[in-house]
Structure formats: structure tokens, C-alpha cells
Length: 447
Ligand SMILES: Cc1cc2nc3c(=O)[nH]c(=O)nc-3n(C[C@H](O)[C@H](O)[C@H](O)COP(=O)(O)OP(=O)(O)OC[C@H]3O[C@@H](n4cnc5c(N)ncnc54)[C@H](O)[C@@H]3O)c2cc1C
Image (cartoon, rainbow, N blue to C red; front, side):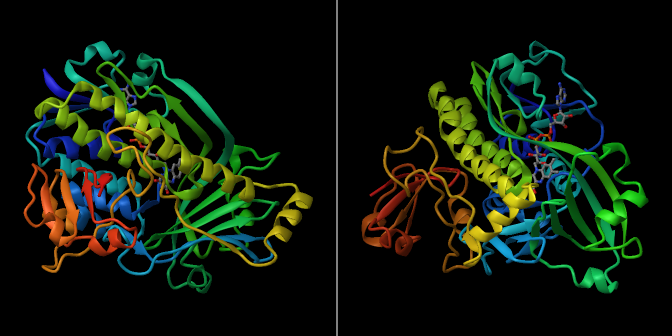
């Protein structure tokens, strides 16, 4: 019997396979398809997710195939007025890496799969559709099986609908870098809040750019990529001489969170337990955070004698965290997707004093395996560079750690590795002297 069976080998299942493989657990992955999903989906992940890839030993490999960016995301109306900006972050962000990365999802999934292949204790079964979880023989079964999750049905989770359901056309274009109109495209992400036709424009990297185009009444989804229909929609940006259409599909964007991420030995992660409209570029990121939260807890229960109830803290911690992101994405969607010209004009007047600036949320985990206190307890500890040039997590490894004042930590080794001096300034600014970090680098307790 395996320690863990993972159902679904999308990005979340593939990352989880890496993290569990690295932890020395025996893992079997089952995936219906034989090839990586080819249609356009995620293009952005954040610094926290790069830090998780670092913990899986894959950061350098992924950084080489991914575009880091210090730029933000601009909500702009049809006349070019900037309404809102999600700020960019210059240089090395708080996670020890640039805070925004743009990528081609099939290329990322390929690297994650190569990563999982490093571990002889991970076996992958492609082309294996699972019709019933009773086919799987493992101590724990994790459903990373996407929006139509089979494991979710077996758990009997309850769906909470956060209200946004809207079809969009999603296309990737391969652009001619020498074309003047391509050169004129902004490097930052644009959310075009045009009531005639809301759109998102992203520089994915290399010659590839992403357009997400909201469907309007009267659109025939099957015909939107016909040249006579597609290029007039793109007229503001590019024409047929500037780019070729690489791939396209229509999705309905959803905003839902499931209640019930665990029943007995069944667990959920990724789109199987939450879906967000992509206006913050955070859907996959949330799934990667699920994997990072769950991986160390599964190892603790299966190998280190932690009580089984530790796994109940997975949903109690993660669900409120992901809800914060989805609620913000829904609010941004209401700004972007306004199609009534009068209401759009009223919206634009609200921002006439200047653009509203915001950052990604940094929510506290819900109650669980952490002290019962205000932030920064339950939030992510930053990743400083150490004097020896290493990033902090390299010095810690996948375990608990005490960081903070030299005087307080110099002699202390309570099973957790102690790093005296590390993060002391960050803590002092918050009136604190030391912090206990969990293997996923969230703060369990402060002194
Ligand atoms: C247009 C668009 C843009 C997006 N942009 C972003 C972005 O910029 N940033 C971001 O973070 N996220 C973004 N997302 C979200 C992101 O793409 C998803 O959250 C992510 O791909 C979900 O990964 P997953 O592994 O949970 O599920 P999936 O990728 O859906 O994988 C599930 C896998 O399970 C397999 N499976 C299902 N059932 C079975 C079964 N019974 N037996 C065997 N195998 C099974 C499926 O074949 C599939 O391979 C975007 C999504 C869309 C649609």
C-alpha cells in the first residue's frame, strides 16, 4: 500500500508529488490524460510560489523558463485613464525572489514532471482514468483532480458560490517582436475596463502574449477566432501582420469554494476545492499553497508520529486564506466587467482623483497549527539572504525553525533548527524577539 495516492497530474498534483517524493513518502499518481493539458490557462505566479518551488529544489530550473517582473497590473478605462494599480515590487521581494513571474503553463508542468521523476518512490500512471476512489490503495488519497473532482464527490463537499460566472475567450498570440505595434505594447499587465469589450493583456514572455476577451451578448463562441471577427476585436492593439494566433479557447470563469476538504483518508487540493476568476492570477498559486500546507502535515502524520487530527488543520487554515483572494478577484471583476456605459462612467468618476493602489492580500491562515494570536502569527515569514549568501530556507531545510534575536536563541535547540540573528530586524519592527516557523515558513508562534 502506498503512503499517498494523488489523483490528477495537473500543476497541483505534480507539485505535491515533488514535495511528498522529497519527504521520502511512497506516492502513486494517476492521471487520465497521456499528455500535458495544451490549452491556455495560467500565466502568472507570485514570489511565494517561487519560494515553494525552491523548497522542491526546482527554483533555478523554473526561473530559467519564466519571466520575472517588477511591474504591476493596471486597470485602465477605454480612454486610457488608470483606475487602479496592483503594485509591482522592485528587485528581490520579501520571499527572496522577484514577486511576479510570467510563464507558459505547459512548460512549467513539464519541469514539475521532470522534478517528480527524480524520486524512485514516486510512480506516475498516465492514461489511467479513475472511476471510483475505492480503486486506489493508499493510506491517504489526495484529489488534485480539478474543477470536476471525483474525490470531491466522494467526500460530499458543499459548494459556496461567490457569485461570479462569466464566459471569456482566452488566446495566446505569438508576436513579431520587430513589429512597431508589438514594441509599443506595455510590459505591465493591462485590465482594459472598456464597457464595450473588457479585456486582459499579459506579456507572458518571449514572443508570447495573452489576451483574455470577455464575451458580449450576441457573440458566437465558436466563431470568435475567425479572422474576420477576431482581428477587429484586437484592433486597438495589433493586426494580423503583427502576430499569429497560437491557441484559443472559451472558458467560463467561476468563483467557488468548497466546504469539506477532508473526509477520513480523502483530501482535496487545487481547483478541486476552489476556483477563482483569473483577475489576480492566483488560482494555481492557491493550489500550490495547498500542496505546501498539506505536504509537511502528511509527512508529519505518516512518518513522525503527529496525530491524524493535524490534517484537519489543513482546511481550517487554507480555506479562509484562499477565500480572501477569491473575494478580491470577484471585486476586481466587478470593476473590469462593467458593461453598462452609464455605470462605467460613474465608476471612472470614482477614480478621477487618481488611481487606487493595492497589493496582493497577505491573509492570516485560519485557526489550526499555529498560536491563537494576531498577525504576524499565521502569516508567511519573509526569506532574507543570509550573510553567507544563502537564502534562509536553504539553511533551514524542510523542518521547524526558530529565528530571531541572537541573545535569545544562541543556546537553544528544541528539535527545531535555530538561526540566531535571522529576521531579527523584521521581528523588532513588530515589537517581537523571535518566531517559530513551520516547514511551510508560516509563523506558528512569536515571542
Ligand atoms: C484562462 C485562465 C487563466 C488563468 N490564469 C491563472 C494565472 O495567471 N495564475 C494562476 O495562478 N492561476 C491561473 N489560472 C488557474 C489555473 O490554471 C488553475 O488553477 C490550475 O491549472 C489548476 O490546477 P489543478 O492541478 O488544481 O487542476 P487541473 O490542472 O485541472 O488538473 C486536474 C487533473 O486531474 C485529472 N483528472 C481529473 N479527474 C480524473 C480522474 N477521474 N482520473 C484521472 N485523472 C483525472 C485531469 O485530467 C487533470 O489533468 C487560470 C485559469 C484559466 C482558465
